[in-house]
Length: 127
Image 1: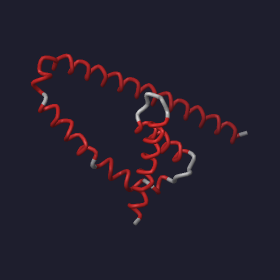
Image 2: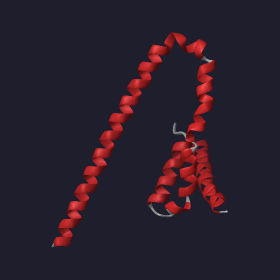
Image 3: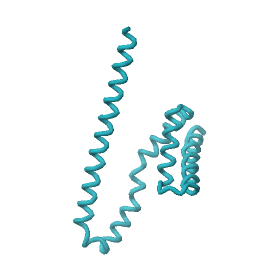
Image 4: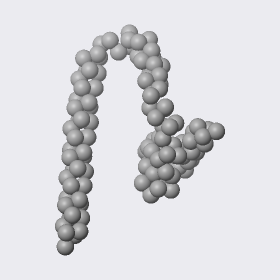
């Protein structure tokens, strides 16, 4: 029953994301709405991590299964893309690099902010 409750929470938030996507005229995918909502609810502790953790870990573990169908689709369409394989490879590689660089910079910024916040807290407790 615990797993059903956790799954219901995740699916409910996903449904709200779908509704927002249908109602708001913004070019934002429903999944992004759902992720932002879930993050906000977890951050404000309206939903505790323990309430979704087990099912979320399971879904992360089986995530590679969700890539089987697109991969087979690409393999079936190889005749259509074989003239553009190099361009697709270069575009994929450049986007991979961009994601890695931006992720690294954001991570460093967050770590610096947390260290600065911790040092200020340490100074205040020493006074």
